[in-house]
Length: 291
Ligand code: 6CS
Ligand code: FE
Image (cartoon, rainbow, N blue to C red):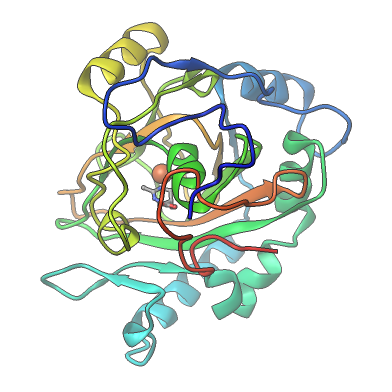
């Protein structure tokens, strides 16, 4: 079941390589005011990401850290398909749809400091496309190879256009050395098609280690040479907002310092999911909300 009715401007997961595609849509949409200052908004528009210092205060960080510890210790929750565990240690790696599992995080996604920033960037009313908490533990934390989230959300969730924005709220200090997210500034303006057909139930593998929907080394090299590489570092409580099509990745964390975050993805209500553009069936609702 693949979208044939909507013109697919962002063809991907083909048998042969396709050339990079220049994005049509803006990074910051106009029309909705909000709490983001003009300089920060201009930076987001140009670089595809922005840092929001002290989004949460120290007491809030402590409360969310305790909530993550509570969730990770819930043995019953570990049997839930929304929980991704590290293969060997069975430590919790991620919990999806966490805004529905945790009332505290359910409140956070509606907090004006969070939702109004997303509305301002997307220029419309928004809804949660995906929420997750990531526990990148010390010593064993596994990173994610270079990818564009929109490439997956377009191919597997049927997201028509890159009119979605992610917010990663740090609950531990993000250092350059403990698996901090690396980004390519300005890369959101170029869509990199990927080679390789989407396997059935791909999410069961890709949420731990993505093999399909991964750009080629040649395209990553081209983008890195054009855009450079930056890294999000900052104290617990700070947040990174980044465009759905920004090329990003993270290294492993072999330090003793964990890197935990709350990861919220807001989609515009003008960009509702259609049928997958390059997959046999849509992914489950706990990964991609369908209104
Ligand atoms: O497939 C997804 O939706 C998830 N995968 C990655 C590597 N980043 C975005 C998202 O959480
Ligand atoms: Fe990602």
